[in-house]
Length: 205
Image (cartoon, rainbow, N blue to C red):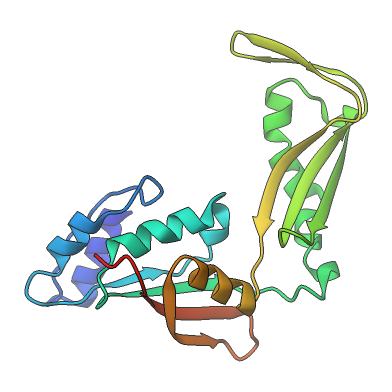
């Protein structure tokens, strides 16, 4: 993907220099790389636009790693899809039906849980602002993973997936809580997508 991105930028903007870097921003800060990129007196602009911040179990830690990698002159642009929490009936349907069920049943079936022995549910967790897909066991299930064997009992539930949703205020609070100062916050006309440009307010590099 980095090679494709580098080629795309090179073809479209021949005068722009690129430097592909592979790193795991969940593992810690990357201030050393950010410092190298500032050679020549430049400021850095970090883009996180794919609406995937909700995929991380510890979103604050991920954002803290970004914050700790930035200087006070750097900017961070976060993009997320917005959800109207008052219309839950419109949030759940994409997680129901044959297609999501068939996809999400791969793991339980792989470890020996049969679909016919479970009940599939997609529900909204109002406290965590997320969709949760679970299966309820209708009978005991004997499981074997590697050399380990154990039994899951009837009426136990297994969380198959979660999808965190955001509103304007939850994003603003999340960014503020980890030490970002909002410079710009805007949405599309239909208020379906948000862009927030922020800078670190403390622990600057």
